[in-house]
Amino acid sequence: MHFDRLRPHFPWITLVLLTLAVGVIEPGFLAPTSLIGMVADISTLFVLALGITPVIYIGGIDLSAQSIANMTTVLFTLSLPVLGVWSAPGVLLAGAALGFASGHATTRLKLPSFIATLALGGVAISVGQYASGQQAVYMDAKLRDATFGWVIGNTAGVPNEIFIAAALLLVLLFVERRTRLGRALKAIGAGEPAARASGLRVDHYKTIVYALAGLISALAGLLFAVKLAGGAPNIAEGFLLPAIVAVLLGGTPLTGGVGGVLNTFIGALIVAVIRTAMVYLEVPATAQQIVFGSVLIVAIALTIDRTKLAVVK
Image (tube, rainbow, N blue to C red; front, top):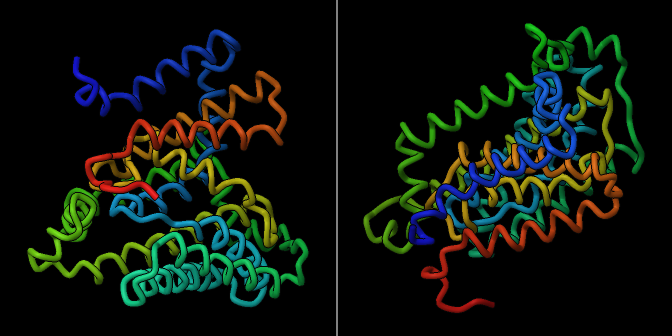
């Protein structure tokens, strides 16, 4: 079979092979309780990856996701005693605002997406540091349980964070495949110049994507805060690289136009299996970023569409 015809099947083939390999290393890995625990452990990172996916789908990159999540943990923890349940929509709107600013900088100021999102990520870091006094903050466990305890609860033995991530996946999948926005994003990712020539409001849709990415990054931060009963300006440190790896391993290349959120689901499972394998093999935490960095290079090399790159800089 020709390589290009086989390429779309790489993600699920990789997932199956890795799962079987880890199952050989540790037979207990394939037990239902073990698999459910692994999926629950990856849920928040998966949500972060889902936010990054639409940006990469249109050929951009979002380097602010981790910083927005960090900022959100602080703002949510500090605002919960004052605003109660309304603290959630407040921090989600804050994340969306930063994402909108990134989109505006990219579309109106013509900044490369990695510069715009890196800069707004720096803003998010500063906000989190200032609000927290550059230290960890903690929420009252009773207040957390009374307002958002259901987030860390279980339904029929399955952690609710899995259902939250699954619901978000279904919503984004519907948007991607059944709405005008989804069709516009596919056109932009497939070829932005052609999309502009056809009369598509490219800048409008790109700004929406970055705002959506910021909102979902804030949701990931909210889940972090509830799960850990607190926040810190660096609490999600080390999650950006695995999240991007999940998107790329799933088959959404940096050049955009193909893949999508369902692919990211497969990619996130691959990342989960890799992380579990490193635990079984006793790979030090300090070395795990080396593994994900290497995987990232391989993922880009295998998924990128070189026909869209006249020059590599």
